[in-house]
Length: 383
Image (cartoon, rainbow, N blue to C red; front, side, top):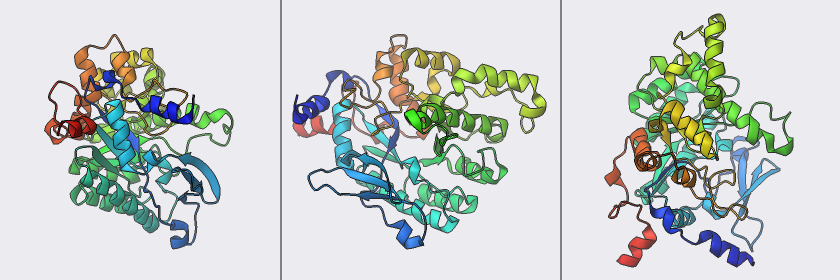
């Protein structure tokens, strides 16, 4: 099969994809032209996109002088994303930066500049295509004061609904008191928080077999959840809305161990919060990106389907997206094909839970005439 035939097959719309409306909480985007921050600031291995092959529309990501990965146009242009959404039945994408762009390691003022560039880019896309995209900002968490300042700009000037942050901030866990003002400001402003693993634990030890992505990422997310629970963040800020990527990482599967540790060693675990960790199940959200039906069923039983939202990790291959190796994949397919879920539970996970988490209204997005998602391609053909 030729490359063109494979691409055509991959992009062929699947009628089943249109059965449900979908809001994809977990997608990443980059600016097509990233400023040369290293030149501007005089230091650092910042991410650059280089277009080295005139025969290809792809770009190569470099971290400093080191090749990081190759990305397709759907990673930095909104139009290919909308085509993919039309083909796979995704009504709305929530845009956030690629975590390698967090730049928490920079000088605070420089980190603010990076955040502003990324946020202005995402905001411009959301304002151009307001029925297709919703934006999450990034903020310089290494300086809580500047982070709050940029958060306020995201919410009051850029039209964003919240921020994406890393699973830790340099050498600080999310329980660190220095970070609390950021979470406090999020609750005050009604800004949601999407927590994504980055700078993974033990990466140097696990360079082989892609293990940082397979082992450390789930551990990082569990670390973030436990930090916010044990640190009393959820207890002190009951209205704060937080969603964790990748189904909450390894946390759902290890809640029994976490709870037992809390009960048998309160001197270690209950230093800052004496509430049982299990009591927080259902008080935060996770996305659906777990790649396994029984795991999704377990999560629904453990924390209730109301706190699970669709997340695909688009446009990266470890996400729930079609590739040459996994052409059958599409955002939400796992939820759609999990037979133990009722129709209403599927609709909630794929659409309504996301709207509730983000504080948005259904009528803000594409019209719904027949109970399913409506693509821009369909709309154009009917005009």
